[in-house]
Length: 256
View 1: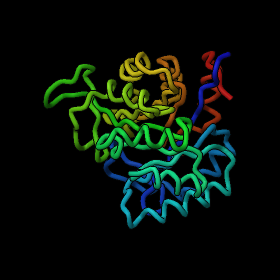
View 2: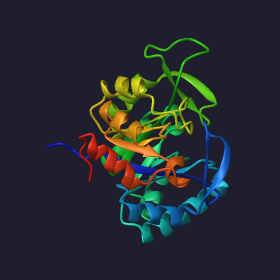
View 3: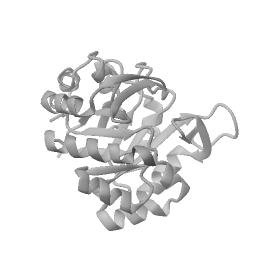
View 4: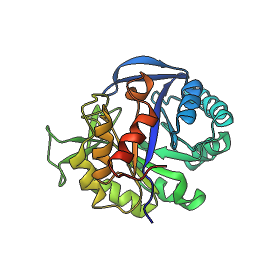
């Protein structure tokens, strides 16, 4: 049976508002997260992802409140990430209404966290978020891509493909692969990076970073993505979820 490709709007939330920039810089306000999530639910989004981009402890309660209010308003699965450092953080987010939780920086610092979350809540709850970029400065990695932190500003020297593979072995149920080189550019997903990660993992792969046209979504699905995530093209009215799904169907891609 062919699994339908999912279309996922992403809400980058800062202090209770949705923001969007290019390569995580020059952020501008994109609206109220609950209102946007409600709109995307009505448009036929398969899921909605929240990323707390400031992820400070002082802002954490704001995130829980946004998740609670959104869960009451929409009926599609919610994935929440940003600042998740422990299994207890995951527990609180699930209790607030999240269906899945994304981990990134804390898992890089302590990979055992992936196994701890998977063992306690199940792999289906855990999405590994990988902010990857092509290596241009510093020592090369085997795949040519490295994992970054701090919104793509700091390299780690960790090979992005190998890290995705290891995290899946530890229990990650999905991988959200965000190209930091393409993020917010609307120039298209990094198809080569997608294909390279796809060859190494068997769990669902979510493409993120660079969507600008319906054709970009089609190309990412054809490169092996199981789900297609985008932000600015949806927030600013360039595309609707329906338009993206229509283009995917026309190209022979199965969607819901």
